Length: 512
Image (tube, rainbow, N blue to C red; front, side):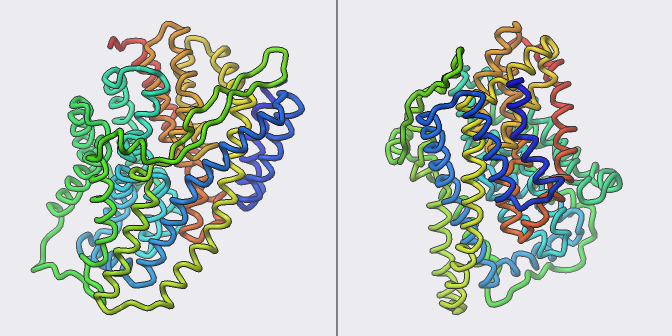
């Protein structure tokens, strides 16, 4: 009975989004209400427990909202001053094949951005570029969401990797090789998935000549990076190698006709891309700040242990320094610096207009408020489900039912957690230790199971409620969320199934 009740908020959210096609904020509010009623009436969560879960949700919403607002402001700023147009036109000049542009941007450029910052920024930045190039809006956002998911575990300078490593207490070198195996599959399959979104099976047939060699190079590069212990660069360098190889393959296939002339308007290409180049430079530079300094310059809150009132209570562990906002690692500050630099460039180029600046700020507020409200709803729902024991009961039921076949199902739990939270870090927090413990109980390799959790959690971010909503907001498609999910969910589940098969074979044969 409790297992059925545990899954109701998830079913409610899916029905509201896909069947009833409610706006994301309303769907989140309805699902939250279901989770709240069930948590109080059947799982015995106390007022103290609700207060703690609410505190965590508020802090997470603020953490992510800072990124959302700053990313929206930077986008409107560069778009309204004409920089996006210059970038778009030069993409057309350098890559004249629409299919190659679509795949290169949605699969590889998003991966590069994820390697630096993440938190939804790849889709927020790249999807509008694809739309302005003339691609279908729903396909553009769906492709960016799926296309960047391969990059998440080692993205954001390895943030999610270090979380899963910290939660499971497994040595990073034990996690590295299994992570590489699973990530190789997602690199390949998300690339194929982007081709499918573009043009169905014909798109796949056209894209394999690019996807196969590029994925092979990316996998090889990532293997050497991980083997060398450079986990924080596991995505960035891999994505850059993929971009270089795909562009080279394209140039080898097309006939060159004379000298290439770059497009220039009131702004040149270098002036237009400078804010994004600055983001990369700053985030890379911050990696050289000593870790102890980076960790000290942070804002965080601690939350006490709570437990439910059931006969066998569920205990939500105390959270010391919960989800710290590190000043030198949080993308919001970098985005603000990039926005300030963009303003200086526009003034120097003679295109500065205070009215455009104010309009960018106005649009940011207009879109940022509903985004924050949605984040609050989804954050509260997921944390209430976690702290009341609903998520753990679901996971235990699945694990107990499947037994030795559990490795087939493990990736689906990672996807589920990221669907709810929109964040691979949260997915790893939710299920990382659970997946390791199940592997230990079944006598299976713990590192392989933990790696499967993290990579599948990354895949699940492509349908993560908050990330989908952020992308829909940035591309003015909040009324198309159900259409986007309908495109993505079958592909994500299919890739998760392949990962389950790989996990079952790998975990029963791998010796660390």
